[in-house]
Length: 159
Image 1 (tube, one colour):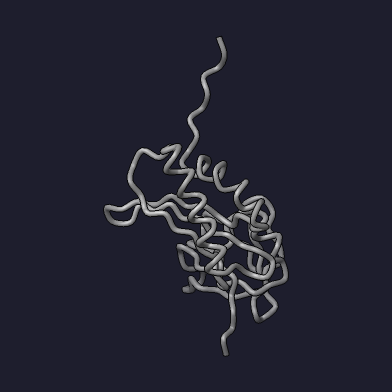
Image 2 (image 1 turned 30 degrees about the vertical axis):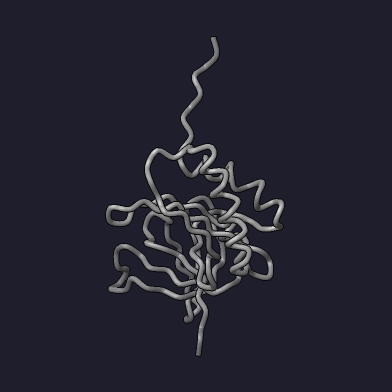
C-alpha cells in the first residue's frame, strides 16, 4: 500500500500543463494566478521572454493550454482563461523575480504607513528570505518584509 497522493492545487496543475508548452515556444512562466473576482474565477498565466512577448505568443499559449485543459478537465469550477505578459511595471513576487531586477527601480506599497507614508520608490538592493531592501532617493536604505507589502512592482518613470 503506497502513500496517498497529495492533491495538487489548481496553480500546480496549471503549471504542469503550461511548462512544456512554454519550453516549446521559448517562453518563460512569470506567474500563475487562480483568483476569484466577484462571482467569476480566473486562471491567469503571465508569460515572459527576454525581448518581450507578443499577442501571438499569448494566443499560441492560450490555444494549447485550453486544448489540454478541455481534454483533461482537471479544474472543477468554471473559469475564464487569460494569458498575458506581466507588463512593464510587473509585480515582483517570487525569488527569481527579485533576483532578476536587483539594481532596478521599484515601487512598493506597504499595507501600513511608515512615518505617515505607504508608497515608496527606490532601487532594489537585495532580497533575502522574506526581507527586501531598497535604496530611497535620499540614500537611505529601507528594509521591509514581504508580508508587510501590498505589492512590489518595477517602476518606470514615464517623464
